[in-house]
Image 1 (spheres, helix red, strand yellow):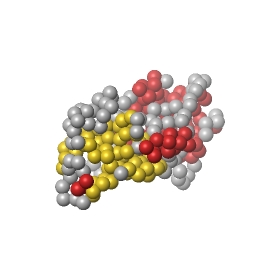
Image 2 (cartoon, rainbow, N blue to C red):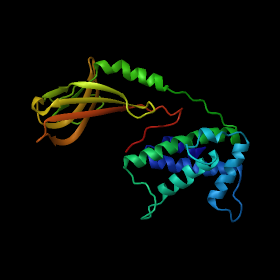
Image 3 (cartoon, one colour):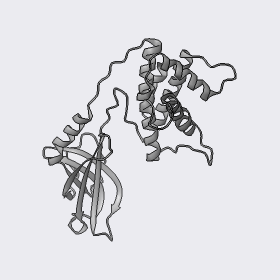
Image 4 (cartoon, helix red, strand yellow):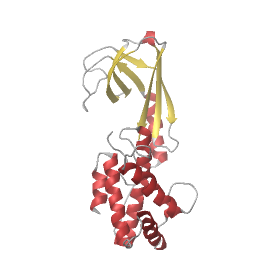
Length: 257
């Protein structure tokens, strides 16, 4: 339980996965201790089948693919993610910190692992877990409501970003509001919503950009600093922003880069 709790407290995705995987090993060894000389994958499979026999539904936890659900779950966590995350051998599968595609794979595996741990803890330890979520429909409704009034903007203001910001340019520098189009759901499952702004470079108030922002009529929504970007030799400037919502069935879904 402590491994799982610390997994939920971590800000780093890979550290969170490591603690969650240790929680997995702890709960599996509680359900079925390893036998002498038993390989780790073989033990994972055997212990997982003990949990399956006790009522744990692996079909809802395993990624899609061939083979039975227990094997897919074990291969997903033990082989595809644990091995790739805990090793860095050249010419073998491994994950690199900061690579977005790798982060996506690990985040999805961690979400499945978290659901396994809550269900396994209930079965093995009798620990209940009360959860709640914002539904996909609810997130889309929220994005749809603010979309008509949301505008993207850029400025050459170098002022650092602070949570108390209320202006796109706190220093009073020139601001360009971009004609903005609401793209809608961009990730296929309803967590991420896109907004696209585009303008002729000739219409930018300043071709040096240090700030990106978004606002609705009555409030500044986001403000970000970027390394000085000089827009030169192009006809059009485009700015695409994605709002990501975390709603992982009671589990932590957002981690620092």
